[in-house]
Image (cartoon, rainbow, N blue to C red; front, side, top):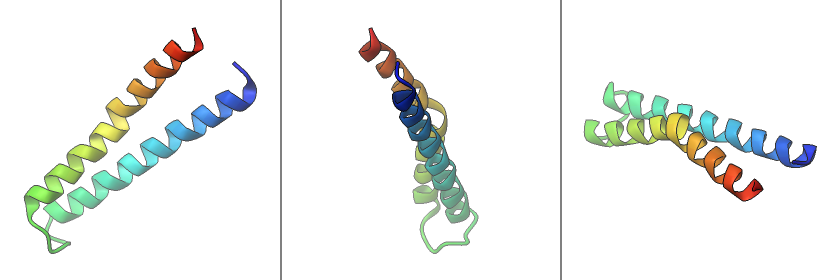
Length: 69
């Protein structure tokens, strides 16, 4: 793997995790009543954020490993 490709992949993983944390914080704010939306919407956004932080990077790395073979 070239250094440019590794750098691009690392940047992509970092951005996915960052936006996942951002989504989770927004979802938590909605659930806490800081934003005028139903709490169920906050829960869904929070779960999407957790997915982006935990599972989506794993799926990306697995896909990249298959592509590199």
